[in-house]
View 1 (cartoon, rainbow, N blue to C red):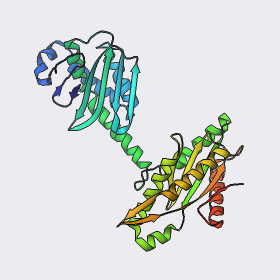
View 2: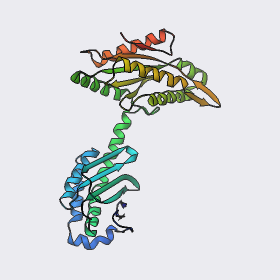
View 3: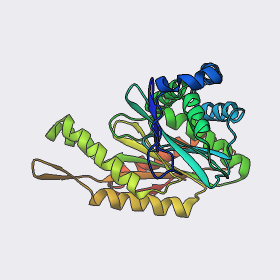
View 4: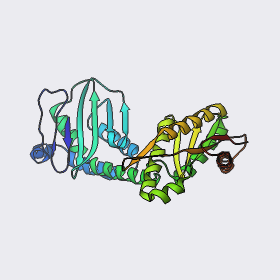
Amino acid sequence: MSTVQQPTSSLVYSDFTANTLATLPHSAGLEQQSPAPDHALRISGILQTTLNVEQTLDLFGREIRRMVSHDSITYRNPLQNIELTQGKPGRHSGAYQLIVAGQALGEIIFTRKKKFTGQETTLIEQLLCGLVYPLRNALLYKQAVEAALKDPLTGVHNRTAMDAILQREVDLAHRHGAPLSLIAVDIDYFKSVNDTYGHSIGDGVLKTVAEATAASIRGTDMLFRYGGEEFVVLLSNTGQEGSLCLAERIRRKVQMAHYICNEAMISSTISLGVACLSPGENAATLFIRADQALYQAKAAGRNCVKLAE
């Protein structure tokens, strides 16, 4: 494993049994013989034309391939749930931890069929210096975009995200003739929780309901906080039977969940309305029908599921 940072860097090469240290100041002799520093600056300028992480890494791979042959490049950033691979991995590999200004940006791995020479690993390390700042900018931009689409309290998608994703999923469902369902969820008697315990406790209940709901749905389902105490679950490729079954599972899961405060357990129930996309229907009417079914559930005594007509 190696670490690349500004202005110094260290390398631990996976084909070696011992660490190999190569700092940029000590590479002055190589700089006299190769254009690596100039190439690093040129690469940095090229990479600054995009703020997309995948495009940044793709451009970097194209540029570095001209100077150091390799079979694949893999980039991993567990903190942002990113793993991207270009090419087919080879037998020998060199791995680098990317760090700039004390900030870890993830790991990049180069592979090929034959071992990299010492001069090649030093050249790669110098060229990586042209990647770290553009990559950091792309990661920061990605974080900002995702934050704008998340509800800060519960961590689930917000209404802005829902509006965009719902329209997209409705269009895809119509195009492919696939089923699509929407579940509107509302916490029963939530106002009384705030009035009795205060808004901070109410926030805790909201997070508990969001967590219980998220734990009930599948990986392909999407959960949104629509506003206040109302949530929306979007189910792609799911028809009436599957959506009703999932809605009931969510209802039971939330009923069993408890928010614990000062040794007191606060339980909640939810009402749910389910609507399935009809031929030619748009996103707005799909949501309206689910919301109407939700109010039917409340009128029926709450803590139940109703299907839209």
